[in-house]
Length: 96
Image 1 (cartoon, rainbow, N blue to C red):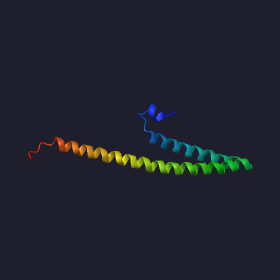
Image 2: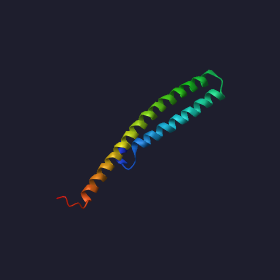
Image 3: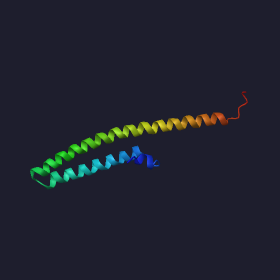
Image 4: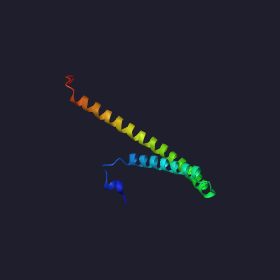
């Protein structure tokens, strides 16, 4: 659908980060409920698969968090470099 081209105002890495966090929390809560509340084999299998899905979403959460942190650090360093260059250009030195 290429929504990232249509809605450029959203921070897509942060949206993906929030999706992973909410999915991991929901799968974890449902897995605990399936294992604790129901005692049949199907519920226990669903709980195990839910815990596995939680681990997969947690790994994705960690990887996306590292990417977002790198992206934000690059943005900060670019802003600092631009601000430093602007300060140098606007200085009133008579060194010419």
